[in-house]
Image 1 (cartoon, one colour):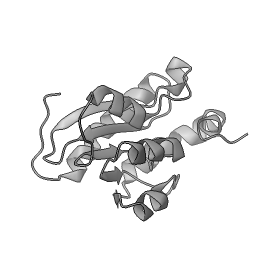
Image 2 (cartoon, rainbow, N blue to C red; image 1 turned 135 degrees about the vertical axis):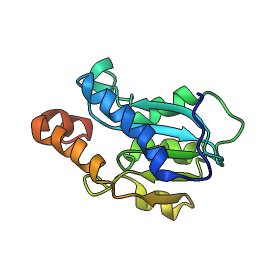
Image 3 (cartoon, rainbow, N blue to C red; image 1 turned 90 degrees about the vertical axis):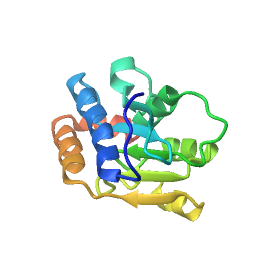
Image 4 (cartoon, rainbow, N blue to C red; image 1 turned 90 degrees about the horizontal axis):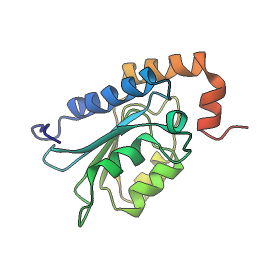
Length: 154
């Protein structure tokens, strides 16, 4: 994927996910982005929520980044960075494939499965990022019906 980071620069990793979230918003979708990195900080895959654009309820940002990363023998040393705490579906993806670390841009808007991931040995880092909150907060304010559908509120 071409982009490499030194060490575990979580803010720089989050910027990749934010780029994806902004792209999703520009496409008319839910502004959530994600990126999968290896333990050295090399970008493996990136993506954004495409549920609205593709009319596909399974195309969450983490799913897109994971699919774009390609196949690996093990995901234990990978880091899933996402602008919002992963939902239960995406938390299940993390557990199913043994992703070792999740970095959430924020979890105030939505807590998702962070506690469950921690309880099951996943390292969880919440950056409490203001831009992540503002980006999604503006979307929720402007399109609450789309957000409610995205998180399964009826």
